[in-house]
Image (cartoon, rainbow, N blue to C red; front, side, top):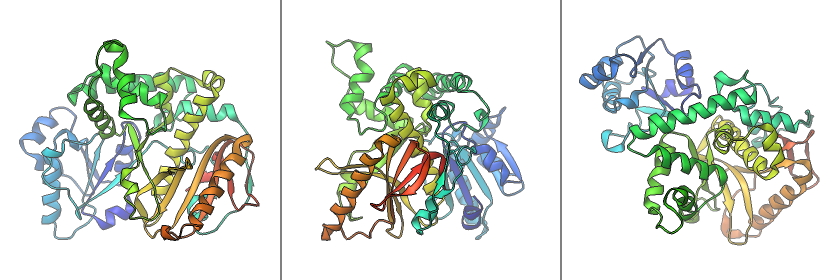
Length: 414
């Protein structure tokens, strides 16, 4: 925030509801206007410039409720003749593109927020730093092995206001959170609440997968329409996915391919995760005990937790790429869970495993990736800055004889 306020006339903070956007904005601001309070929507619609009034930096909260505010802020930044850090815009959904005339490029910087990572909530020591791995800094360390604790953290989620809640209480809140999205936000965007709810359930069952639209289509509409009826078009499912993405409920992870200009980066299907693993658990109707009884589902949820944290840590890196987290899959069946990429071309890779018993599998995958890229002169890629396996149930952060880091999730940080 401090960096962006020094570089741009205005800064937009986006992210799913309840992740702390307004709190973050207020911590860096001198005044605030709430667009969605009282009669402010009507006032802002009649004269958007009134929402800009206040001591700067001035927050305009839930600005997307009146899309004209974007262009009003952009023009005000132009009129400010180079002054920086004047306005902070926060929003939990993306407005319709046809209602915003200009991108705001060069005037409005964008910061995307997620729920708290384990380091931010105090449940990871952060002794193994992602930035440190890129610079070759690593010190072995030790942490407690607590599988039930990981299940609790996944169920509770990284929601700032729920940090002190039990997993059970947090899940009550998350279920109500989803209910409000389905019954209020989705209809406001012209979509069916029932369809969106079934699609979220399908995404939870296919968590972290590059599921085909056909698969999601069948999951979403089969029960409602009957097996003998035709399914809704894939285009309909695609529009619902766009809606969930615009609400920042779903994060799409793009494919990675060396070299950087490879068209395969554009052609590889996206994987989909939720902004927080607790969303998937709430949709599936689970709690820590049932999660631990279903080890396969636990593995998918743990992967979502790790991807949430990696996105937070990667965005804190200096000179990070536009899409700092990607995944790798090739036609030989080789697949790597997460590739962290910086704008200078340096990169690192992670496999994600639930327990120490699966670590060697992750090591073998990463060694295959390293060997494959070394043998391919057309890849034109730098050597990986690091290769690592992130583990749920593991005690020691260490470097193996193969040169692979083994990192318990509760030791990882920015």
